[in-house]
Length: 486
Ligand code: ATP
Image 1: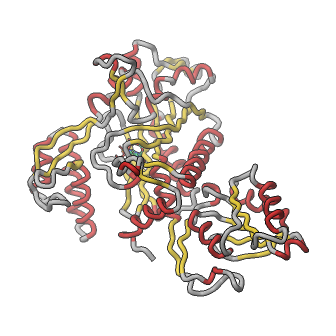
Image 2: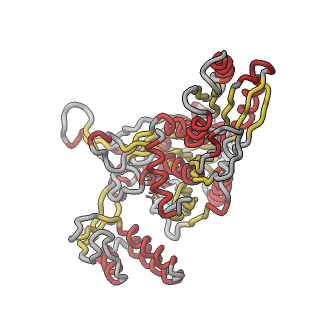
Image 3: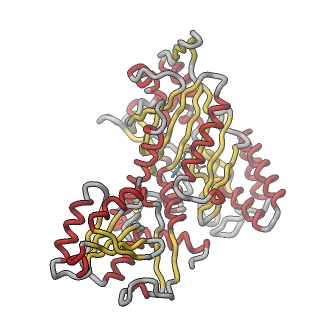
């Protein structure tokens, strides 16, 4: 079994070998921190998106979805604070010429301290860092790095430059004239598309507070340090929901959404022990409360979803910059006000990495469990134990041999199922090899059509996780799979 240290590498290789995720423009040596989803990765991604969308917009009657454009008027980003504040303090090592995010260097040091059992020292270090970041004290941050003996992981030296701020937004030009007035940004978060449409949606949807607006879409950040596969990308997708509530009620809604989102994560069949809640000691300047849902990736606990109580900051800012009223009239209390907002923001790609990390298993199969004569007797297998509802492929239909009318019967089963869920048909290779390939992409069910099917209309269903097989009527296949993916 892969240890945690090499499990991450094994997942990356597996994703490439089995058509989940490829480096972008790989034939040109790739583009750092940009990835393409292949045939199974894109199915997995779509299933997770659909599951989130359904969970948010269908399960809660007071949440609706939108799909806003990536390009927005440049003033949006001035108003939101991104032009002035969406910066990360960075430091360069003069020997390796590598650039690092200051908070990442310090957090890695704190993690090492924890691994040595020096928990108090690690907490102290992080507290000190938070205070210096809050004061924009860059000299102090540099001193902290030097005093704590933090070295460049490549050159192993402490030959550091000054700490500088880098804005993470990508910009480009709109229209044919490239002058300053045509500069436009690729959105670094999807949230602002929701805020600027707040009244459009509220009025046309006749929505009453409290209500939410959900959105799934691409976001772009010029991440300086980006080497954790799809954990930190320059082009990624977010699934966000902004919940508009009455001022003064934000505390209780924050707790409510924290609970609801934690339940959602557990509904992906991940044990509770793999999650932890990380409250922010000092929330961002626009928030009065914030925290992260962290998952234990093979490289440690890291944020998957952020929950922020964003106050009325964004709507107020847009009101000021656009000179358009962002107020809501609350007929219950007969008052106009700018609503407060609770945001739940989860990275789609990080959720995919979480699901891959959870599902990936290398298993020793020295004991034969399958039918006599099948290759279930192989020594080992790699299996992705995805919950059926998000598995890229739900069912494989496999005629045991390519003759005797078996492919025709198998095709009929395909026809009965393929308009209901994603199915895969394959007749090449031994049945054992075909099972292995389905395990490797996480297909929960395989059905095999054999000679007996011709006499009694039964097929063998084989379960991915237990590898157990049993005979069932061929006309029950669709129902069994459908039940498991609901
Ligand atoms: P981090 O501290 O890891 O940079 P963040 O706090 O800046 O993340 P948010 O701005 O709260 O992240 O974004 C919400 C979610 O979007 C995050 O929880 C994460 O899942 C996802 N996300 C943010 N940046 C990236 C990225 N560069 N690549 C992939 N997903 C990302």
